[in-house]
Image 1 (cartoon, rainbow, N blue to C red):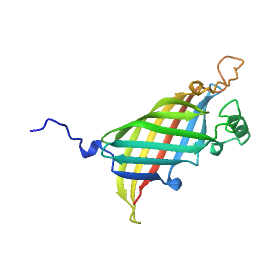
Image 2 (image 1 turned 90 degrees about the vertical axis):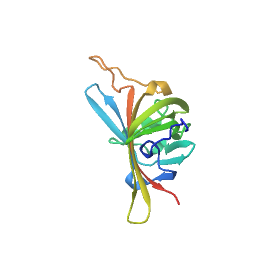
Image 3 (image 1 turned 180 degrees about the vertical axis):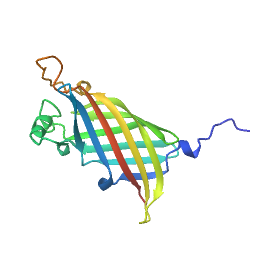
Image 4 (image 1 turned 90 degrees about the horizontal axis):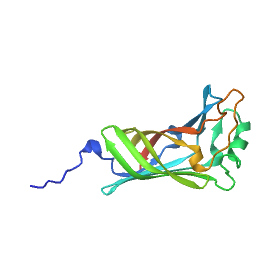
Length: 185
């Protein structure tokens, strides 16, 4: 009798190549602002692909830096400029997983995030749902991942000290991805 452990269906990702559905997916980010609140932005244009095979799984997501949206359009130019993303020189944001583990409905993706031409490790944790057949003969998968990183690790160090202490913009950036994926083929 073999002593090898076989992964249960609850601990494996559904096989195949899955691509994000742009209409039903969103990536949001937030940072502390002026010490007293949280400022939120959105990455409305991105592409994500999950490939799950017997050997493992890989998640890759890319977005054009210029696509980031802010509540105040005047902030777009500053964030795209050299103080933050330096989008003219580094037009793409990228995440590539190095490992993905599933335990029931929970999932963890270790990977590398590239911002401003700098790549650093990040961990994303969340949930997975599906697959679910839709009325159009497609199979869908829901993936919600959250994580945080220190923007200084990517060379994004701009800051404005406040008169009473504290900083105008927090260093920790929180990211939440709600991705609906459709299986190809």
